[in-house]
Length: 361
Ligand code: NAD
Ligand code: TYD
Image (cartoon, rainbow, N blue to C red; front, side, top):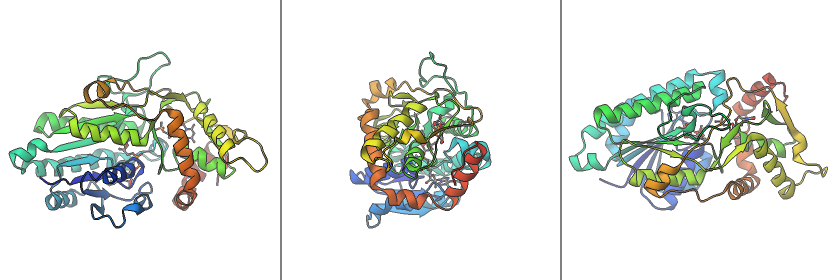
């Protein structure tokens, strides 16, 4: 079997970081299948334009015939599934795309992979892996003093996004249990870093701060997320792919729980010193408390001790070092931000935040 892998959703935030680091480390050829929704951006992959080990295919994971054809043609030893609708707020406005891609799409992808895998030689069947990239949000919301999510925490998804991811996780589990497909699942906490689409909290705040716009905090800003630098997540996925036990689930997290308001204040402080406002005031003056998200989960926290113990993975970045790299990246890539923050993006931001009582057009 050759050293090719198929990555789905590799033009999005985490997928692009994964593809870039995979190819930087010369780990083999990547066939990158991405539908290029609003969140997919070929600009994330411009450094690979002339790289013969990157084969980009625009297409949908729900297109079983296309996936079957790609698998037959490229004979990968693994499929890593990042493709998804990923933004909770969008799932509240319009859940249908989430069901279509995250549930139905994962089902069709699994069907195509099962057929391909079934026809491999016994040796290649043994070596093959289907790695499904999922989220800690499937476990629901924690109270202040609750223990962090482990791999055995009961699923309790609260948003259409997390419910659709939970459904996809269950399908992956069932394909292992029923058909013996060699699957692996990772459930990771909130990522941040380069190429993060500015609809999510951290890149939105950096973008709005520099544009002189409000920094919208939902509710009281005391909701807690567990932040992980995206390259650490990519390293965890590589490690699970290499050494994870077939059929197992691995929680991935940064041991970095922070209330949203603290994250935003840290970003403001960093920008105050790296790119001070012309009027000498702090970016924190732009903070605006807005109407809360419907069904907003209070706290996520990942217990990542299984992956540390069994596979020796630990995050390399602290929140302080990761957030500094991230802010520097955004300051150095304002062209990228301006290109993605146009068209459809402007429409989303204007509609979504006007409903919360904040003008951001
Ligand atoms: P993203 O929204 O930035 O990117 C998703 C990518 O998938 C885009 O390139 C999009 O074009 C593509 N895509 C969407 N529908 C598709 C379809 N039907 N067929 C093919 N491609 C399609 O998302 P992300 O933040 O990079 O997340 C990647 C994965 O990691 C998702 O499965 C998400 O649930 C999971 N995850 C994300 C986080 C996070 O903090 N961002 C944390 C844990 C897990
Ligand atoms: P987000 O980046 O959308 O990730 P997720 O909902 O998957 O955790 O949001 C992170 C946290 O920040 C979440 O508690 C919602 C909050 N938030 C705001 O307070 N304001 C915003 O404008 C956004 C986008 C998010």
